[in-house]
Image (cartoon, rainbow, N blue to C red; front, side, top):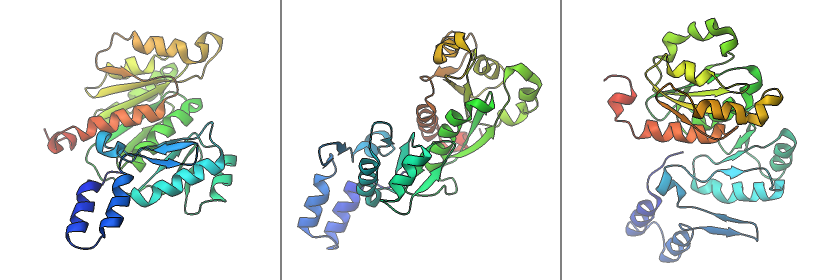
Length: 260
């Protein structure tokens, strides 16, 4: 999703005579925020502040609103994402705006497909069980659309610890690990005790009654005695992906490629 500074691009185009003063003025007006009707204000400077464009949160918005926001943002960014988009909502959005891509398990739609990684380093996505896949895939697809390489390690929960141990060598090659688990949420602690990479723990709302909608694994992860764990909110695969991406972007290239 990263691109050159749009202010610099605009000024260079103006200096070369490729852009009129009037056109430059219109574009500069949009570099703060752009109002859409009475329902949205697009934050066009978010990429310059954080490294990533604004992402559309789907729930609570109509398909018409989602389509209009994506249409307004698409000319400015290589990829625009909308999260928590059900298949029915995507069909309604696509009927209003063409050229979209949909990732069903992750419930993400985007204005661009997944392309080869643009950044060095690799994130390992470790998922405890099949029921946790939607949250894990939200993280994986978000990272891939943002230009990062991802390797998936699915269904390696602690109930069958040999499954995790069988991929331990591969886990050690990752620069960052995102570990997704519901039930009691023990998996991130086990992983953090096995590898040197930082671990981003994601509790999910999957589990029986005492899971308390994800509160039990959240507390387990927060109370872990294994060092090097950061915890995001329940079911927040997107937030885990953004944290991992910022971590990789902050690494020197030789560290990110593993040649230290």
